[in-house]
Length: 396
Image (cartoon, rainbow, N blue to C red; front, side):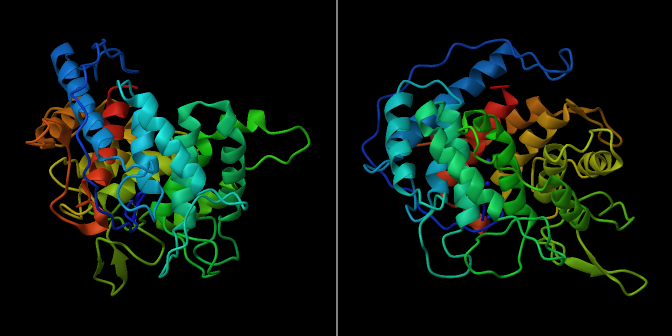
């Protein structure tokens, strides 16, 4: 990662996991297509035939995930419950014949990972430990989306845990989120931060269920804005202006030295969309120069063939955060220089449909990245990212 690397989000933050084959489930029935209404009076409306194809692709992928779920309810590497939370998120937002059974097993597994301190993670040796912030944030969103009021106490404790993970101390990392809380090291990055910011916003309504007299949990959003200011590129070159980097002192896309001898970190696609989405979650107005400049960067570097600045690395996370960011921004067309505006929903759906692979034994569908960076060679992770992206693009 990240959560997944919503998740090395990142994931561009590191999970390494592998799928687990089980007996295939019978083919699922296709969902009934509906006409998609978008905020922009038809500009982003999908053709009914394309929408039917997209729903069929979603159903095939959910069937594939159902067949890959382990007996204990987890998917992929059980050391990282976020790898179960992401498929659960996809199931919670969709209709599928196995939804109830799959969801119940996944919820049971995630609850088994919940701790008294509110975190939802396992202890894992190495840098970042069990990625406690990352796993907790994704798990609490998935539990919240299930819609069972009985899960509210776990979600509320998780919100307190994530709140405590926001870094303070007056350094360049202040206001952001890192992988973990246990090491005490000064470290935050935008990949983990957007996952936490999103989790706190998406589960905000759970606070209505908090017992009277108990303090509500929320982030310091002003500190979050200051962190985002430090990871948005100030370099005036078209390559970088308005884009975002991984953390204040690093870009996964590398750096250059300008004519003045100053080191400039390169902006790149997945983090620019993550930064744009984070600004919106932090209640920065959509016409604010910070948000507009991030959108302008995305228009100048529009591509679905790669994660701009990173090539194939983190490609499915890129699709995931792109759809959420542009949907939240509320604009359906991308003004590409020298060509017709791109209708991003149509383009994104078409791209994901073209990339879905078919399991020859079952006929079910899945996605996988041949580039293993950020653990996307795990088909469970790539498939969950793709499903959530399709669900957002379909307005679900």
